[in-house]
Image (cartoon, rainbow, N blue to C red; front, side, top):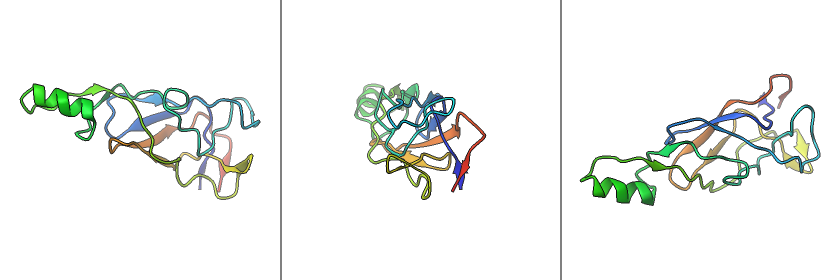
Amino acid sequence: MGIQVCTGAVMMCSFGMAPSVLDVEPISGVIVTTPAATIIDMVPFLNIEPFGMCMSEMNPEVIVATAAALGVLTPMPCIPIPVAPWAPGSPTVLFGGIPALTDDSICECMWGGIMTIDDPGQFEVEVE
């Protein structure tokens, strides 16, 4: 059971060096005070902004920079690439047939990072 996430939610990535903010386009048709998020709000640079610098040793840019620094881990700019929708989302609240995004959901990045919701952007609506 989690809290419904909306635009403005604060996210973190396990390999990112800074928080990011979720941006939800109002296409779901559900707007209370801000657009409500669904598990498919995961498009890089549209929904998910970069997390500052990336420290993942799976990121090709980090690999090259680290090799150039003779093996010293060298973070590079984050380019989030989600590999699947947020999970688990809400099993009971659907927007346009798509599960609502809840603050207990995670999203995996191609570079091995786990994106989480630190602040859902609202506190009024608890969903199951």
